[in-house]
Each structure stands twice: as structure tokens, then as C-alpha cells.
Amino acid sequence: MKEEKPETLTRRFLLKIFGGVVAYFGLNKLNSALAQNTSQPVQPLSGFTGPDPNPYWGAVGPFVLYPQKLPLIQLADRPVLIETPRPYFLTPFTPNAAFYVRWHLDNIPNAVNLSEWRLFVGGNVEKPLSLSMSDLINKFPPTTVAAVNQCSGNSRSRFQPRVPGAQWGNGSMGNALMTGVRLKDLLDAAGVKSGSLQVQFEGLDCGRGPKDNPSYKYKKSLNLTDSAIDKTLVAYEMNGEPLPMLNGFPARLVVPGKFATYWIKALTWIRVLTEPDTNFWTKKAYRVPNTPRGNTTPDDVKEGCVEMVPIGMMPVRSFIISPDGSGKIPMGMAVMIRGIAFSGYGRVIKAEFSDDNGKKWQDTKLGTDYGKYSFRTWETVWTPKNTGNYALAVRATDEKGNIQPDEGVWNPGGYLWNKIERQEIIVGDSK
Image 1 (tube, rainbow, N blue to C red):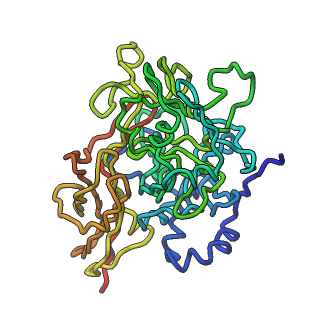
Image 2 (spheres, rainbow, N blue to C red):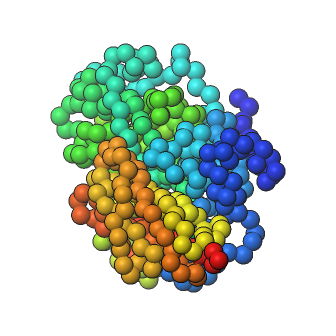
């Protein structure tokens, strides 16, 4: 099978193919998305210390084109890592063509024959299943959930000291209406036997090299006692369309509230286990300190005194999407400040805005509630009364009472970042 290659874009070509997007987002927003990847000097955001933090909202890299995708920011092509630009987060649902992509292994499917593809449910079950796409669609009731898919390393480029791994900006996330079959319905149809402990999931992707390499296959597991089992889906639709190939066609796991490491793409195996899963991606990868917020220090890690546990739920987060700081705002002009918020622990019930770097806060107007695991938009009108530099900030609160902190976090994996976000704005004289 011929491997698809991305096309690196020039600024001129990007502007040409983005014609329709310019009309929707406005030229300034598009230029800002482009500017974040130029070599122009940019002042770091407030609060960063030490060398080399990423000063941009998104990742630093070229724009590339992949099949079924708009131009996205490339971090790597083996495996494919591409990030969603900032303007696509102005709305509660992220377009499929703009949805970020993160694969772990470099041999990924670029075509799937649905007449041959099967989803197997096996292991410690009474009746092993071999299900076609027609079986999933016609033999089980469909369920739809709005859910945020966020890479565990989203915003890793903010970490100080720096940590290895893909240096994501803020755009390795997205929100979509996912439709499919409840995992619980599949397990009930197969009949889980007594003595079962976990459910393991495996996709079609694999690594290069010997098959006995511990990371050759990407597998993740959930405990059968995990409440996430009851809300997990095997999804075959994304925003009312078939899944894009790069986002897991023909079916992927959806685990609302949890990080995307559990959302196995191109799902082909569901196995019920009687012993704890000890594969590389569960036992060694995607683990965080068993401390408040998953926080620790390089010295404690070096001394080996940090207990590490599997990463779980996404902490509460919020973002300012517009304005993006690409141009001055006239003094006295009423400006609509807009953004998004979400939490893996439950629905966002409050988003607060500050125009003085977080000294004073005021409530914003929340957008439509699409469910406890969805993005929730927010907006507020702001009228700057003086010229000068402003540090705008936003913080969210979820229904469990979790409030965004104003302190960073550090762990060796570069996970769980949810510090209050800021946007520097220049207000000019309008006289």
C-alpha cells in the first residue's frame, strides 16, 4: 500500500486553500495562526521562567496537508502528530477536518476494507464475538455523547524544566459528537465470565521492528470496576460522519472524561483479562506521580521516591481563543472575549474572566451545555478604559468544585497541565 505523504505548505498556498476559512474566522485570526510558526520574535507569556518555553498558543512547526484534513501544525510524521490551530476552537465542536491527530506507532492504517474488517470481543467470555460494521450499526442501539478528546501531553511545551516528548502547544485536543455502541452492550453480548479483572483494547497500528518488542502493539486497559466502563463507546461516527482515517476509522474507543491515551483508534480487539495487563503501554507508559495534581520534582524522580500510577481523568481547563493578541485594540471599544472550558470530572459551571492578570475576577456568560464531557463556550464583553498592556486571564470551575490553579505542574511525562491561561493584549489610543 502506498504510504500517504503530507504536503508542507507555503504561506501563499495556505492562504489560497484557506479561502473559505478566511471568510469565517477573519483574516487577522488566520494570520495569527500562521504567525505562531514564524521566526519573528515573540515575548513569552507571563509566568514562564527559565529558557526555551514555547511562547506561542499552539505548537511550533510547519503547516501540512494530510488526506481528509485541513492544514494542521506538524510535530512529527513518524508517527503522525499534527495539532489543531487556535481559530478552530471558537465553536463548541471541532471540525473533523481540523481535529488533531496523535498516533504512537508508525505503521498506521491508510485504508481499511470494511468487508474484511472485524471487531473481535474475546478473552474470558462465554461467547466470543466477531462483529462487522453492519453488526455494530444494526444489532446494537446507537448512543451519542459529546466528549473532549485531549492528548495527555497537551501543553507539554509549557513545562519547566523541559521534559522529553512531543512539544505540544494547546491544540492537541478537540470536542466531537461521537456515536456508536456502548462497550457495556458488547461485553453483555459476549458474557463476561467470573474472575475477570480488566478489559484490554488493541488497534490496527503497529511498530516497526521485531514483534517481541514490548511497544510493538499499542494496547490499553480499563479495570472492570472503573466507572468509565459504563460510559465508554465503540464509536463509528464523529460529528455525524464516518471517522476520518487518521482519527481511527472504522471504529475507535471513546472514554469520556479520560485522556486520549485510552481512546484506541482503528479498534480491532476487545479482550477480557483475568490478570492485570502488564503490556508496555499500561505498565510503563502514561504514568503520573500519585500526588495532588500529579506534581513532583526532578530531584524526587531522580532519587526514585515517587510512586507512579496510570494517568486518569482530565483536570479542569479553560482557554481564551479570541482576541489572540495579533493586533492592537482601540481604547474604549467594546470587544467580545470568547473561549472554551471543560473538565473530565464533570460539566463546567463557571468561567471567570480577569483583565488585570488574575487579581480580580468576573463571571462570564456560558454557552450551551452539551453534556458533562463536552467543551463549553464562554464569552464576555470587555471595554478597555486605558491604553497599555493587559494580561487577560480565564479560569473555570466544574460541578465537582474543581477550580483551575494558577500554578504550573511538573512531572517527567509532561502531563496534566492546567494552569490558568493568559493572553497579552495591547490597547492603543483611539483619538
